[in-house]
Image (cartoon, rainbow, N blue to C red; front, side):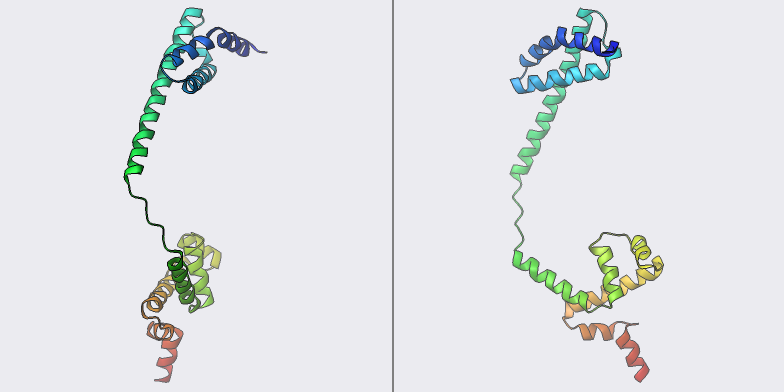
Length: 186
């Protein structure tokens, strides 16, 4: 055992009881246990700051225990206030699982009307949480090209979800395959 361990062991043996009793007179048993343990943990971390005399060391430890008790009390008050606020707030209504499934089905149906590469771009952004730059890296294109692709894909999905007619959304979208074919035949 090195000199720090020996000093701490002597400090612990001599003063743990006093620290525990100090905390117990001001709190319950569980809190007193926690305060005494935290006080001695602080003493271990700051062993160089603990005075060498018995009376001075005890006073230092009790001062630390006082601050630990104050921190514990503040934490308890904050927890109680938070609990009161949470209790006062009405519980959020749980979404109807049928609505959630229906919305998911609508989004998946709209997504299926996109080109495969546009679907993958939307999935990387929406489902995998990548940024546009990160998704562009994954897809091997420039950030600008992906931004344009996403803009068109979002517009097409919006039309499908609003109108429910994927053919109309595809033909209305400038630059889409259907619009380009329509211009070629005109």
